[in-house]
Amino acid sequence: GELPEPSEVIVAVTEAYERFRANREGAVADYIPVLAEASPDWFGISVVGARGRSFEIGDVERTFSIQSVSKPFVFALVCEAVGDVDARRLLGVNSTGFPFDSLVAVELNLDRTMNPLVNAGAIAATSLVPGSTAEDKWDRVREGLSRFAGRELSFNERVYASESATNLRNQGIAHLLQSYGRLYFDPDEATDVYTRQCSLDVTVHDLAVMASTLANGGVNPVTGEAVVGPGVCRRVLAVMATAGLYELSGDWLYEVGVPGKSGVSGGIVTVAPGKGGLATFSPPLDVAGNSVRGQLVTKYLAERLGLNLFASV
Ligand code: GLN
Image (cartoon, rainbow, N blue to C red; front, side, top):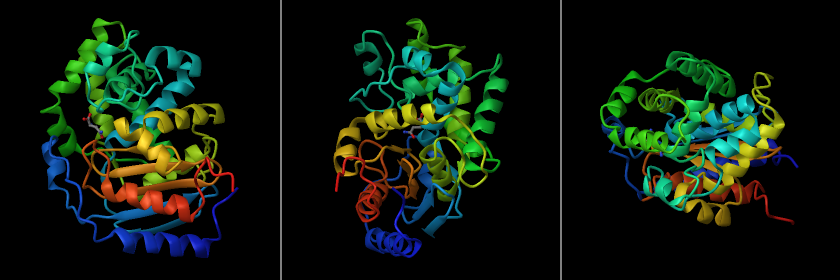
């Protein structure tokens, strides 16, 4: 299948925006001090079809740090580099049922792997990015994510400094993983590259292009570049369906029926295989760290645009 006619998509996106614009639920993240500067009113929606057509409304030009929305894309790069068999063995692919920054989850899983979409598994994934130095790994991450976006992404120094000064917990996770042989590079350097990765700036349009690349078998529909292979995309989408919204991933799949990934700066990407990518940006979050408006918009648009994977009619 494909997305509905362009005129229908435009109407649906506009109606979604108007419908949820006045929603005041949720709270802007403040555990990374700079993120607390975000306005709860920022709100943007972008849909990019698997052939590169885009439909967008609201704050589509505003940049924000990508945060955890980087995770599936870095996992994709790692899967492409080491293969999906080793990627699963080294990182794990099961949902944890715990918050994204949980250490208990690592302790409770007997083989000490997590999944690449929570912090532990994501830091482990970053540690597996090819490159013998942290600088090499960081170049690979930045170039790879830029290829997904179809443009050179810039690095937000302020967000990086703010998170680096406060990320003792992520450092703890990295050291815990290392103690179990489940980290594949120096823990402090891996955490640093991970923190840089989370500090790349994107717009909601960039996120929709990135999502659409996953919807299009790994070929960026705007630039035509093959970023990763179709087999990698399938694995990435499977993990997004399992764990993309942390401990609320089951609720998300039940309601929306499409793989998604959220981040604490307020972004959510959703991938409708073969159809396209959808991205929302709205900073107020629920208790798990998922954008409130983003979830409402995505649920609404998934229904209006016929995206649910489990729908047979
Ligand atoms: N950089 C953030 C962290 O590691 C990302 C978390 C998120 O977006 N859920 O805490």
